[in-house]
Image (cartoon, rainbow, N blue to C red; front, side):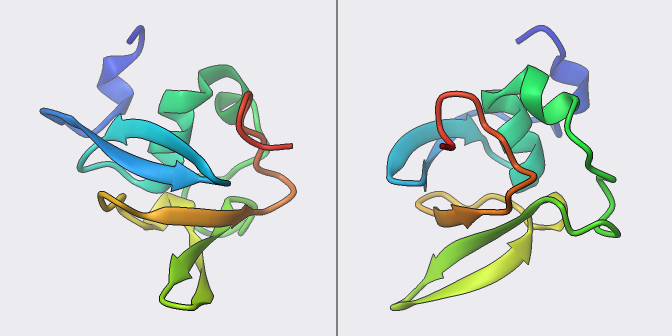
Length: 97
């Protein structure tokens, strides 16, 4: 990783699912940092405030049989988490459509 200082320290990668694709991301980080880990250029250059004010990083996670909207810059990743929808402002190269 070329910019490890931007990530909260982590010892291992955890598996999550984003739009039906399994991905490994650094534990102890917010979802937005994890998205940046997966798609450094597109997330770094996106129109995001990184503090929850703009809501552009909203994603929906599977919560039982329902979906729950969360702000990815304020939500810590949890192993096994399943992201089922991304806001239109979130573009993850190789993942989002």
